[in-house]
Amino acid sequence: MFYTILVLIKVRCVGKGSWLITRPKSSSHKNSIKRKLLRGEEIGICLVLCKMQNMTNSFPGRRIASAFLFCLMAATPLAWAQSASTAPADAIDRPLEQRLDALAATHKGHVTFYAKQLNTGKTVALNADTPVQTASVIKLAILFEAMEQVRDGKAHWDEKLTLAKGDGVNGSGVLQFFDTPLTLTLKDVLTMMVIVSDNTATNLAIDRFGVGTVNARIAWLGLKDTHLYKKISKPATEPMPADQPKFGLGKTTAQEMATIMERIGLCQLSQPGEKPQLGDAAICETALKMLRNQFYRNTIPRYLEKLDSTEEGSGIGSKTGSLNAVRNDVALVAGKSGPIVVSVFTYGNEDKSWTADNEAEMMIARLAKEIVEAWSPEGLDGKTLVPGLGLTSGPDAGSKAEASK
Image 1 (tube, helix red, strand yellow):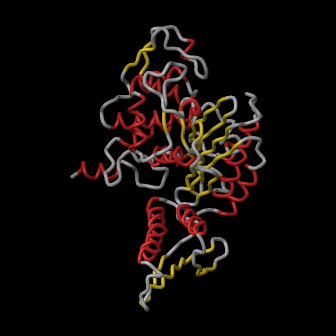
Image 2 (spheres, one colour; image 1 turned 60 degrees about the vertical axis):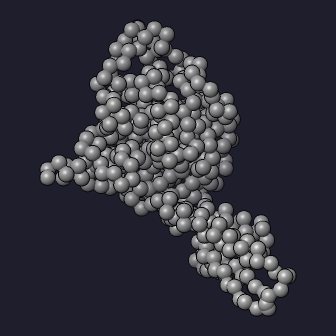
Image 3 (tube, rainbow, N blue to C red; image 1 turned 180 degrees about the vertical axis):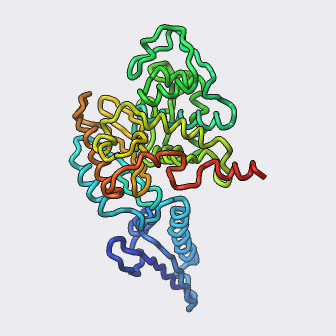
């Protein structure tokens, strides 16, 4: 007697609305199926049908194990991808994504992006898992760590930090021009770090919290390709990873940095399963006030601000990052149809100018305009750029209820 093994993969053809039954024809075919399952582009079900017939030595049992292992390898990533992702494959806005891909292809440089409408789960992405230089966008991770430490009582917005002689560094910001010594509150330092991307303020914040602590928080968030390497324009105080020369101040991906911005907007300061604390909303409100008053607005906000007809302040909270050949922006956009996270990174840009019509900045602005006009054609609503983004009853709701018992 011998075994006959038949491996069937049930595949949904995205965009065609049909189903087909196929069998892997080669190793490369199997690997292709597994890659697509990981990306959530196909839904697979493995069936192993074993029929006992005359057993012979011509079909060893190890072939059975091999086929069964393939089924497990194909099915397991699918289950992981569906449980880990907040947007299933059918939530990907394919028509919009195709338009954005075509637009990005015209850029003289490289583009990665990730966007998500939080109330619908709709997403678009291009190379969203490619590690890129953060430039100043890594300052979002520092801000998030500060928020968590204020929440835990390990830091306080009004605690005093001292700017000493020699602390000032070149680049963006104004603290480098101030007389020293100068005493500032932690909130003032973080405000300067976010609103005008002050490099000197950033270094003060890094001194306060520590590079290792920020990176531990990044790991706590489950982010694998985001890292803060060192202070700005200062020698490293610890051995640098081998990839530091490539990325400079920090590295991330479009999707991972969107995750940090999403958590700030939704005021998700707790771990999964942990209840929000009384005071979370106030912490998030402080951070959102910094982000919505971002000084540099030539990228994501460029074509969107005119859509904000409210008197509640900007409907966009963002953090930019720029180097000669790098332009980045990550933002919360308070669309009337629901809040949107937009994360766009460009690098290797031919246009290295620092003018208002820099090609990369215009590209980011055009991509953001396409996304927001597709998902929120009625424009923005600045009143919803509050902790929870109008999607919850408020981060403190549960805590208040507990406190009243």
